[in-house]
Image (cartoon, rainbow, N blue to C red; front, side):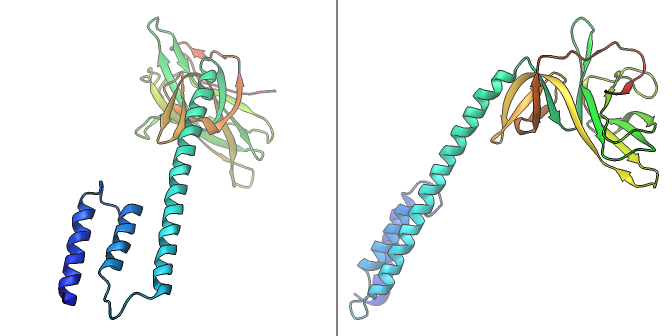
Length: 246
């Protein structure tokens, strides 16, 4: 058999066998098939050297170990997420303090409105600033000026669910943005958290998320505290609350 014929036959055999493999990736079985086919149709006058064959076997061994490791890690991740989901269900009905600035506004059938409580702690003394509430489209729904605030104190903002025009904002998820300056005109950062009751647990792309009463979701990893439920209900009228906690 000529060299060209041998190569052609080898390619045909390998392609035929490979077409039977599910998927389009070269798995360990396909790799071994390629190696055996190559060895079967090698040139008798110029056989494969031992070192080359051993090197290819070593490559196969490394490939198999990596694939087994990936499979094991995938199974471990899946098991971990499942366990986290089970553990997170114990949070349902309890109030959590979560890192972030997403708040929710929800009105029940009786007309009572529940709004997520937002808290922030400036890292420096604040001379003044602005607080804005934005909707999902990043439109400013409500804003207010912030007076001087002290570093080390935690301040609570409970939005009353009204727009700047004094009309009720629709139910939904909003974000609270604060921009504060110190006496030198420098920006002041702040630690930001929200307090809300957990209503459910979801798995979003292998990340366990808590569903909160306002409709927003927060990563389980962002939870700082779990306590008894705290009701933050607002009547449909009035101004926002922005006060310091002791």
